[in-house]
Amino acid sequence: MISYTLYNNENSKEWVTFVHGAGGSSSIWFKQIREFQKHFNVLLLDLRGHGNSNVQIKKAFKQKYTFQSIANDVLEVLDYLNIKSSHFVGISLGTIVIRQLAEIHPNRVKSMILGGAILKMNFRSQILMRLGNVFKYVLPYLVLYRFFAFVIMPNKNHKQSRLLFINEAKKLYQKEFIRWFKLTAEINPILKWFRQQELNIPTFYVMGEEDYMFLPSVRKVVEKHFKSSKLFVIANCGHVVNVEQYDVFNQQVIAFIQEN
Image (cartoon, rainbow, N blue to C red):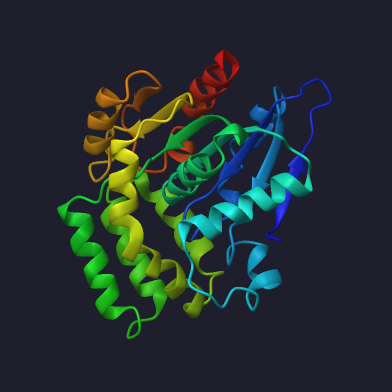
C-alpha cells in the first residue's frame, strides 16, 4: 500500500484527500495542511514511487503503470482507512488520477478540486513529450525533469514551484521516472474522454492565468461542462497554484468544499 499521512479533526466528518503530481510528493501541500485541518480531516498521499512510497514499493510494481492502477492505489488507502467518500484536491498530473478515480468509483468522490488541471496536451506539450520519449533512456532523468519544469513554469515568479518540484524529483529513481513517463502513451485518449464526458460531481478548476499550456483547454471544457464545473483563475500565477498563490488557493478551495 502506498504511504499516507493523516491529520484528524475531531469536529468534522468531512475528508479532504490531496493528490500530488508526477515527480512531487505529499510535501508540496505544506501550505495547505494547517488551514484545511481547521475545517476537515486531511489525508495526504504519496503516489507509487514518490515520497515515502518509493522505499516501500519500489520493487512491488514491475507491471506497466496505468492511470487506473494508480487510482486503485488511492482507493486501497481509502478502503483501509474506512473512508467512504472524500473531497479530492489535486495538482497537475494528480488531477488526472482524481478524475480517473471518479470515473471508476463516483460514489467515493464528493467533489473534485483540480489545480493546474491537465485536460489537453497542446502542441508545445506534445513536442515536450516526444522529446522526452526520445531521450528518456539516454539522459539522466533529472536533466529531463529540469527541462520540463522550465518549459511548464518559465517565469521568475514560478521559481519557487520549479525548485520545489525539481528537489522532490531528486528522490525518484531513473527506472521509476521512466515508468511514469510511459503513462504519456495513454494520456491523449484518456484526456479526450474526460473532455467529452461530464460527471455529475461538483468540480472546481483552479488555474493560474500564466499557465499557458493548460488553461485554454480548461476554459473550453468548463464552458461545455457548465452543470458541474466552475473555474477560478488566479492572477499573476503559473501552473502550481497551491504554492505560488497559496492564500488565494486555500480560501477559494475551502469555500468551495464547504458549499458542497
